[in-house]
Amino acid sequence: MPYAKETYALGLCDRCQHRYKLKELKYETTNFKRTNRRVCADCFDIDHEQFRLTKIRVADGFPLRDARPQIDTDQGYNWRDMFGNVTAPIYKMSCVGSVGRVTVTIT
Image (tube, rainbow, N blue to C red):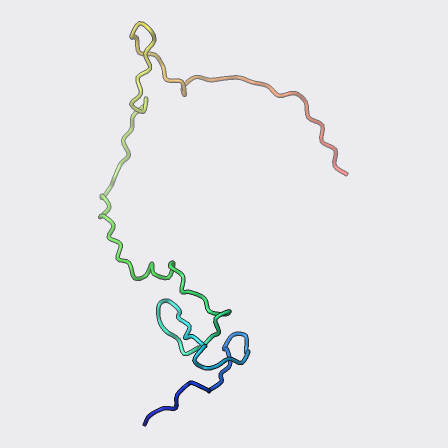
């Protein structure tokens, strides 16, 4: 059975409930699937790209069983002085500091 043309038909926006010509209303999409809701141009939202994440195939590598991090005490850095002697890295040095007095008044 053929349907009537939308040329003069009126419809309501499913969001704002304002009246528009039926051919001006657009179908809303959610997660790249067309829903049965028709909205006006002001209420129409483009389907966001974050919903596409379920469509992208991501292949992660397989994890290692009983993986252990590499233990390296000097992190691969050799600190040398001007004569070529290996010295201790900077991060093993300790520093001492002090701060003056602070008075806090709670009212």
